[in-house]
Image 1: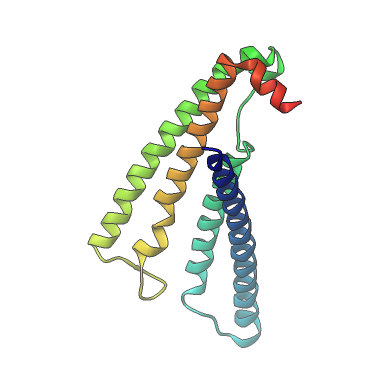
Image 2: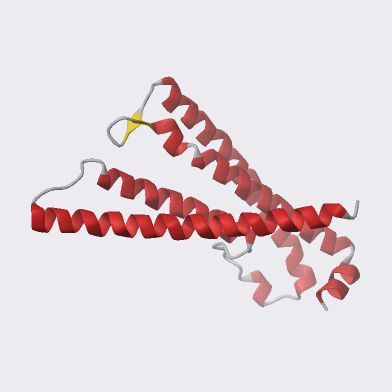
Length: 173
């Protein structure tokens, strides 16, 4: 049983490194491709047909991976007026509700994006001249599943802190 936290910590560390690396690589590739496309069009009156669509896909992928990273570190967009006016122990209840709702919504989005990927596979849609669209869009359900998982973990952590507040505050100190 003592290996479980070690494995979870290592998986979290590798996941964080993978997210960061993917963000850096995608952002760098997007910038190079966009600037290269502009240079080609201005100076050589030439451009790649698929480049603009690939830049749009990079923007989608960056947004999804950044959303996964934000949900991991609890730095996602949140309208959090209540926590500024009430004690932390009372602000936990709305956080539980919000995190549970976010987990459910991300789960629903994962399900429907999976259905969308299945439709693109069924209709044999293609992108970037002749690349299967389902491969490009398969990040959608995966990212929403990961966000749903992280919101569920956050909700569970808040529930634990409600019932065992002294253990979590001792661990934080």
